[in-house]
Image (cartoon, rainbow, N blue to C red; front, side, top):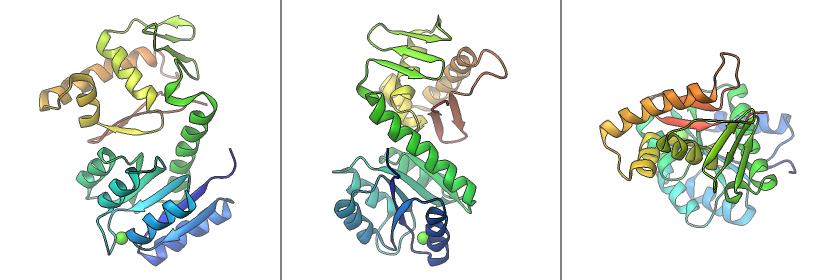
Length: 233
Ligand code: CA
């Protein structure tokens, strides 16, 4: 994949400049927009690969920007919000954002989030992405039609719910999935006790996927938010 084009949407000029300087230093192509309206226009005219979107914009609600963009584009969206705005992050993820960055963030965090997203994009283009019938990620293999998953060529003994969970996470590798999104997909609803059961299922699933302390981490926990399947090198 060529160097992706990144759109930075941020009304705060010093933060916007820091982000664009960082992208420039690392040879990313980038565009910037200080408002939601300009962001929507640039997504439609320049078709960027990744959008960093500040949720607190002067002209429109960031969530509204996501909904508008999502009505026609699958571009990866990483939202930026203040530490106190956990609810906003969850709403943004449920509205179709892929990931989030919490202010204040470091240049390293910005670049790390970008790398996760780019790995996801290149995985989608090389492995047939979410439509492929066999999923491979490091030593993990999932055969969707056969209903089995393998780690180091050994079949994992998964319960039906664990298999559903691993498939959902795998099909969204690189994306943070919220508790609500996951429970609605697995149980068709999202009650408090479903979220509590989800935690229990995730603990057992992670033990099966990471049998040894030095095994690579496949499932990342986002406390209070949800889970993400990582692309393992
Ligand atoms: Ca702002």
